[in-house]
Length: 228
Image (cartoon, rainbow, N blue to C red):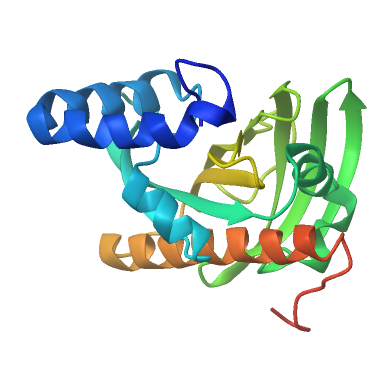
């Protein structure tokens, strides 16, 4: 999480102060936070109450508004989870694309095709909704050990219509680990009831961050159950 003071020592005090401000100016602050997340997505935000839940091992999921290519709006889910590891340790695991199939849910195969500095071009073979799909992502480590952005690589063939999202790595407020924030938007191109798509999308997001945490906290040894 990013603070005005810029260090983790003032983090808890910052959260408490923000809670007090929210009591006095709830509408203003809600609008301000939404603008930060949706417009710039420069860092993840969470409240004192959310931090207390994260410390207990919970996954905190919030809704944010995104934009479709045609300019219309869509609701996306942002999942946050606390990991007992440094940002560097987390980064190593979530950039280890060649081994993603060992721990990422519903992923059958994942291969790095090309690397240009911190930009990876990766082929995925995964189960999306009710089908198996092959697609390609361009994953850019725009801020090393802090932020990864990805989008569909349209220079290669894809079985899905669109994909984009990001990972954000923040130092935990008490300096004990890392808060991982993950947003993912995948459009399979398959007609499906909105309620079903939202349910599946939310459940998938939660399982991804849980699996990633287990992988990281095991030092890269944990593997998902066979067939999952």
